[in-house]
Image 1 (spheres, one colour):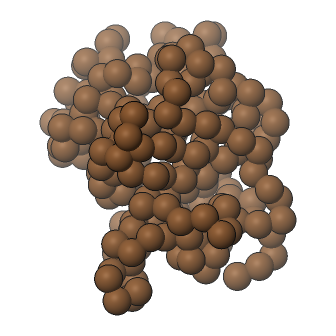
Image 2 (cartoon, rainbow, N blue to C red; image 1 turned 135 degrees about the vertical axis):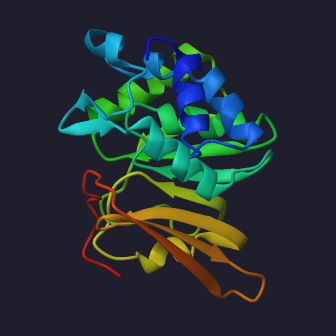
Length: 208
């Protein structure tokens, strides 16, 4: 695929991209702006690309799928764990609009800087990217409408469930599956699982 629109059309035809808010975000946040210059010719291909430090910008199919599962909406507060090149943070910021805000977390200093530069290049002001605290998962004490995790955990971190607002949604890879967990009004969790995915590992402290 040679253009961003061709990539979007491919994802729509594959049945993985469907909601107008997510489609518009893919149009605004051209993947080419978030990959290293040397890989720009491959920006619209449907596979992961290296962004350095052993990390990747995820396959567009997988990003589209996870965003559709997350169901982000205008005005929401969202936590993006494993922001990498800043692409998912930018996509989410485009979706929530100026009434919302996206907080990106990244554990690799060079990628924190990479992601920040990507957001600056896009002129995005309703998102930030910060260094992840290695002693915790997410931002305990804060509450979010949506939490997206872009690296694979070995188990479901309880700390992230505690950071969800009522009716909030967490989308997280665990092992080789993508899990969607929604907190209902009673504080109970509804879960669904999709198999057959591979991600870089989520580095977490040895806590539940």
